[in-house]
Image (cartoon, rainbow, N blue to C red; front, top):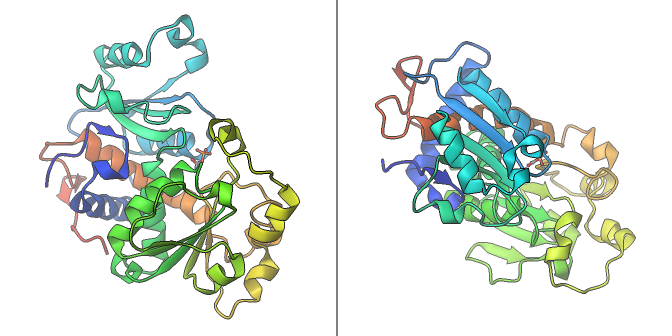
Length: 327
Ligand code: CP
């Protein structure tokens, strides 16, 4: 297996074997639940640096770091020397010389970590960069889908419909790279100014009719309107929230009309009353909290792989080599 990347910016930074190993590791960490784990020879230090708001990613990495027995350094951007004009690179080099092994970073600047790939100041895990990618969210989603369908091989041929603001969503960009590798088909559904501008890869189609798209779905993945990123977009199309809710919101009644009711996923944060209604979020079709549960073992797996890279401990938990099977 080739080395895990020092900068995990994109799903493209991982090969299929590495993704399968992450699924196996996450599976084992989930089985171990709250039992103590020993995954490292030397206790690593991991910083989290959230330059943009977060609830799920920030806290699940913090919990994953602590569950792995690593030391967590919560970097406070507001009180840091970034505010005195220090660059992100200088900041990361400083953390490196302080003994920090890796840093999870969220930023509103797309591709901000790309320049670090040639000569990484520290190991970097992308916790979401602008509209570009959110690879760890896509990986935990894949793990959740695999658990839902009882095996990664069962995902082949399944159709997922992604509804909402696909163009500005970093999660959708990572999912579109990841899910076709497991044979999943993707339908994109949303108004013109929320659809991707670029041509789609094979296996990805657009259907702007929500009800038609839902009929063909084995899973549905809802996205929030990314209002904070619309200033970066050049779209000038008029937008009516009430039309959007009628045409692209999914309600319990929308789903109950279907012959087969698909599970509903959402990476969060969810704007209840816009993309989903309260009754659907409270129903047993809603899988958003399952994604939150699975975020911890998957982020433990990602930290394990990146921190143990090139080490004989990779793939070992509590001294035992885990069974390598993505199923
Ligand atoms: N899914 C996700 O990235 O949520 P947060 O913005 O709360 O981290």
